[in-house]
Every structure is written in structure tokens, then in C-alpha cells.
Length: 323
Image (cartoon, rainbow, N blue to C red; front, side, top):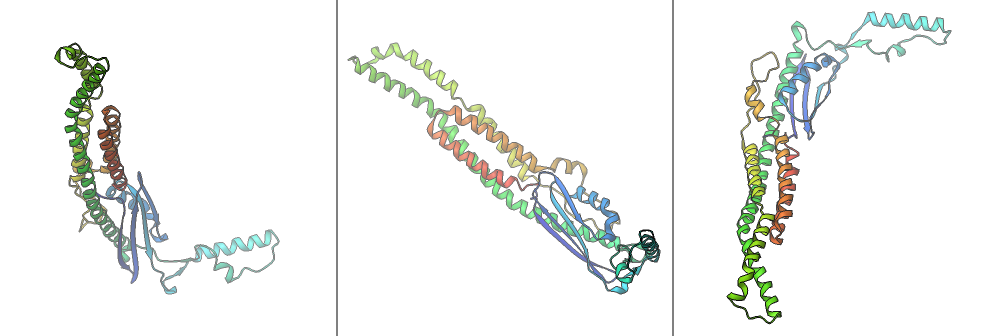
């Protein structure tokens, strides 16, 4: 299980100049990828996006490649573009009868006049360096997300155990509620008989016993919460299985030229999107808790249900950060 927050960084060198890759992730309902690439890497945006999509399931991802500025000796003049600009500017001046001269200061502000060598080619191998940095930075990000995921998992387990404790208390309380109801009805009946001046004994109470048992049966049927308790216990078990299941992945693949994810597709399919599954289970648990509280007709059980809802809310806040 992974969280959706993390950071990864890797640094390498291309043509003797530092190339830095940074990957950050924050909470997001879906997978959203934003990239800030130098012009020399823009052509590889599609491949980078596919790689991140294979590695990550959810989160707001920000990728940044930074190639530190090189000295002017690394720049080249695009003579064809400069001459084309010159012809266009001279024609513009002539046809529109404009004043002023076309000078060097004007050319310094035009795009594409001065160029950096591309990250690639048979000798530079800049894209190969960028791929390795992307792989390493993403692996660091995943490791951080997994560490945070383990911490969140421990917190979630504690919350679910407290919920299970409350469920056991409510379950044990169930048998006592019916007996307390029977005693309460008999006590009210005895008060009424006393008010009528009747002597309390087995013969005077006998005609009312059947009616009391009918009331008890109706009460037991109206406040039967066994089904809700059973579903809640099933949901908590499923929840714990999800957060405690081991998820492979995040390891960096060495010795490959193409960006490739080595995780087994079947295992990945069963393990992915844990956060969404947990979120669904929480919705079901909250619905069952509401039904349980409304059917209980018992102040002490209602108070315990409030405790369950409080724990569910704490758990929900943690689940929002699960991938």
C-alpha cells in the first residue's frame, strides 16, 4: 500500500553539465501528470508520460527536468533562420514604410536564433541519461510513498481494531437489551396494578404475560441489528485484508534501454487502486453504522455507534492519501 505524497530526485551529467530530474506527488482523485521539460526533452514527453502512467496509479504528479545553463560556447547560431528573419524584417520595413534599422539588438530578442545542441545523437546519449534519471527519481518517489503507506496502514489498523471492539460490545449488549425491555414492561405493569389496588401475585400477572411476550417479540424484531453487525464485521475484515496485503512494484529495472515496468500484470491488477477500494468500504461501513444506530433503540448502543462514526471519519481522512 502506498500513500499519494512523495518526492524523488536524481542527478546526472550530459556533456559535462548537470541534468536534474525531480518528481513530486500530491493527493488527487485520479492520475494527473504535469511536466516542465527543457526544450531539448520536449520531443520525449509522450514516452515520459507513458512511463509514469505505468508506474503510478493515482495522484497529482509534477515532473521537472532541469538542465543547468551552459556557457555561450555551447550555443550555435541558426544561420538559415537568422537570414530568413532579416529578409522578412527588411521587407516589412520597405512595404510598410517603417522607420528604424534592423540591427543586432533586435535579433537578440528573436526566438530560435541561438540554439543549444540536442540531448541525443550518436555521441552525446543525452536521452539515455535522462531515462536513467527518470527511472531513479521515480523509484525514490515510490519508495517514499511506500514508507508513508506503511505508516498510514498502521494507523488504519488501529482505527479498525477500535471499531471492532465497539462492534463486539454492541453484539454482547444485544441479548441484554431484550431482557431489560421485559423487566421494564413488567415494572410498568406492576405500577398500574398497584394504582388499581390489586394484589401483586402470579394469578394477577398471568393474563398479561402473553401480551408482554408479544411486545418483546415486536421489540426484538424492530431493533434486530444482527444483519448490520454481520455486514460491518465483514467490511472491517475486507478493509484489513486490503491494507495488509503486500504490493510488489517500485523496483527499478536495471540494464534495459527502454522504459519498462517489470511488475507482473496480473498481480498489479489485483493490487492496484487500494485507496478507491478502501473508500468504497468506508462508505458501506458508514451506511451500516447509520442503520445500526437508528434501529438500536438503546442509548448506550447509540453512544457506541457515535464512537464508531468518529473512528470512521478519522480513517476516512487517512484513506484520502492512499493510492
